[in-house]
Length: 358
Image (cartoon, rainbow, N blue to C red; front, side):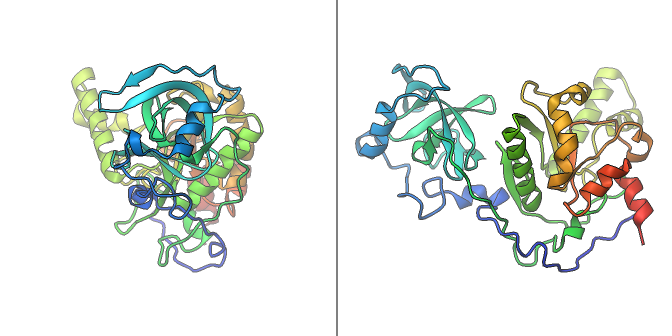
């Protein structure tokens, strides 16, 4: 079954406008000061300790740590890259969209992005106004002027749809991509960050962020483990696993290919390649696992994911139809117009679309 990709224009998405949806162009978007232009004075890598803005330095060195973090310390740490960082332990919150960088410099590599309201675990600061943070298990840096000790109240964000964008109506998101239905060659999307360095297609990203925020209000902390993957990355991931099975388990190529395909989609046949799938688990684990089904996080997601346009994609007992094992962590954006009906039906996406084709 090869599905047709719809192009009908609709006013439903016309109302969705979001600033800061540059996706893969995040490096270009925030080069000046690591925040949207016009919000604060620009910051450049030419700053030194002697030219650091006094207000920033004073605020970082004199303000008391927030209650969530332990008492501040003043031990200086040399980074090995010519930067001196003064140790500190506290929690701060982003008040804008901010690049996360390898080193405290706007010329340093961008390794991710924090959105307004995101929590940053601060471990130190420089006299030039940068904060050292723990980010995805590694050390990184953000500019401190865009962070507050108090989590900001955020207005509703909107999505800006580029002219001529691939998805022109909500119905366009309601399609199948799997081992038999690959993405078309002209498939092209814009992406935005949803959590840490993980990205989704811009509309799916907006709804995913809303879902994670709503869960947090209910005391549920969700962690994203995987989201958008390029087709090239998918190809390397698939081939690496095939080679591993051949070398470690003595499988033939055909055996290894089949075994890998139970869990990993071929390049171009993955919902992750479409930028519409996200793997989500609880904060205490670092890998997907079937027992996630027994957690309060899964219970919340199962009950609320459809409100944000997502469905539990690979259902238990549907393995012969979907081609994949049961994955309680894998959620697919199909749009709020369809998600509730699909979830209520108890059918997998292949079944639901097959029964409702005209």
